[in-house]
Picture 1 (tube, rainbow, N blue to C red):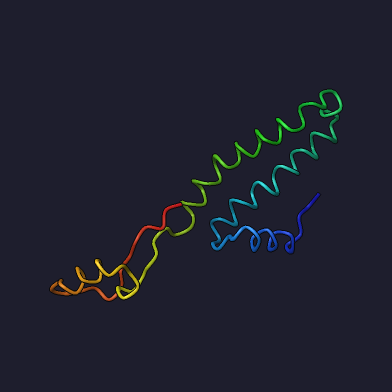
Picture 2 (picture 1 turned 180 degrees about the vertical axis):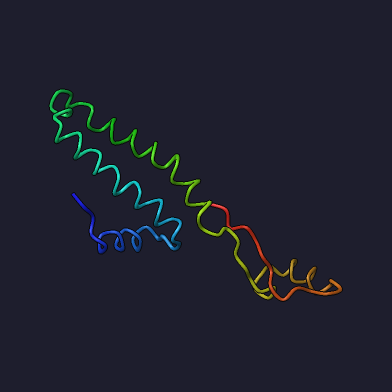
Length: 111
């Protein structure tokens, strides 16, 4: 079962995913889990223990996200910029009071 690009874009629009980092974290779980489950099904492992289908999938998603989240945070830039006129009024006053006020502010987007 392979996912089409259209399916991934629909999930991205529905969930409000706005960054490539978020999309990569979603795609890793959406692609790798079905591939592993298909391999297990082809080998007959799920016929021997059919009750293990859901726990295996949940464990795989947890394992994938454990590594996908830090990997995507490391790959994609976490720094964003904003104009001083777009921040809160208290910060605008502090920036105006500086000797050489910056034209652009940088901040860490985080997760």
